[in-house]
Amino acid sequence: MTTTTWLDLPADSPFGVHNLPYGVFTAPDRPGRRIGVRIGEQVLDAGAAARAAGAPSELLDLLAAETLNPLMAAGRPTWQAVRGALTEWLTDAAHRAAVEPCLLDLADVELHLPFEVADYVDFFASEHHATNLGKIFRPGSEPLTPNWKHLPIGYHGRSGTIVVSGTPVTRPHGQRKAPADAAPTFGPSRRLDIEAEVAFVVGTPSAMGSPVALADFAEHVFGVCLLNDWSARDIQAWEYVPLGPFLGKSFATSLSPWVVPLDALQHARIAPPARDVEPLPYLDDRDAEPWGLDLAIEVVLNGRTVSRPPFASMYWTAAQQLAHLTVNGASLRTGDLCASGTVSGPEPDTRGALIELTWNGEHPLKFPDGTERTFLEDGDEVTIGATAPGPGGLRVGFGEVTGRIVG
Ligand code: MN
Image (cartoon, rainbow, N blue to C red; front, side, top):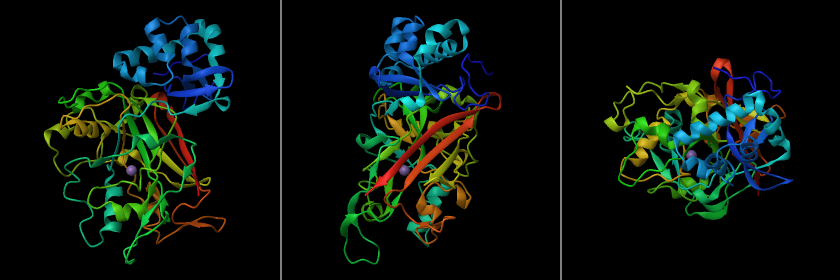
C-alpha cells in the first residue's frame, strides 16, 4: 500500500515515503554530521525532526548520531519503529508545522559515507560474469571453476579505502605484466575498469561460533547500497594467483550515499534463477521466501549509458552469501559490507564491467562522437544508478554511485 505525504512530491517519485533511504550529511548552517533521510529531492534532518516531533529519547539518540552505526546496531524491531515514526512525520499533516523546517534541499548538503565500514567482503555471484571472465582468463578450459555452483565465492577486501560517491579515484600504480612480457614493469594501470555491484550492510552483529541461517537474513541486514569495485585488470591478472585479488582492487571502492532499508524492498523480492546444482542444506533456499532482488541497474560512462545489468539474474542471493560468510563460525560486526560481485546479465549490453563489454579490450565501445574506450582514461566519469519495484507500480530509487578518474 502507498501512503500519501504532505510534501509536494511527484506521484511517481522513486524517493517517496515508500522508500526513505538513510544517509549522512553536512550542511553549512547546521553543526556536525547528521543523519538524513531522502524524500524526493530533499533531505530530512532526522535528528532535528525527531526532536521537533517529540520522539522518545532512545529513538532521538539514534537519529541524532553522526553515523548510522548506532541505529544499525539497534536491531530490526528498532529499525521498524524508526521507519514507522519517519513515515508518520512525513504523512500525518499534524506533524507538518514541526517537521517541515527540518527539510533541506539535496543540492545544499554534502553527503558522506553513511556508516563506518567494518569488514568488507566482495562476492562473485553472477554466473554470466564468472563465465565471461573464465573464458577471457582461461581460454580452452571450463569457464566456471568446479566450486562455483556449490558455494558463493568471495574474498575479504579493504574496508579502509571505501569512499563515498563523488570522491575522485586516483589511477593506481603497480606491477603490470602482459602474458607475452618476460618480466613485470612498474607504472600506472593501463587497464583500469569498473565493476557494477550491489552491496548489503550488516546492522545486527552475531557471535563467533554462531552461523547466521538463511532465514535470519532480515534480522541482521539493515539495507542495500550501490557499489563500484574499481579494478586494475593488469595489476590483478599478474598478482591474483594463488591467493586472489589484492592491490588491483584495494586502492578505492566507491559506495552510494543512500542506504535503502530492506523493508523498502519487499516488492522487489523475486526467486533467483533456477539452479542446476543442488546446494548443500545451509545454502538451500528452495523452500524459503527468496531473496533475489529485481534491481534494474544502469551504467553510464561520460554521460552515455553503456550497460543495463539486471540484478535479478544473480545466481547466489545476498541471504546465501551471508549464510556462507558465517557458516564457519565467523562473527558479524555492525557495518560489515558485502558486495555482490559484478552484476552481468546474459546479453552483451547487460555486462557490468568494461573487460566484458569490450571482451578484454578486443572490441572497444564506440561512441557517436567518434571516441572509443576499452578501459578508463584519466578524466572519465562512471555513474552507476538503480531502481527496484515498489508498491503500487512505484519505483524505489537507490540514487547513484559516481567517480571520476584522475591521473
Ligand atoms: Mn568485485
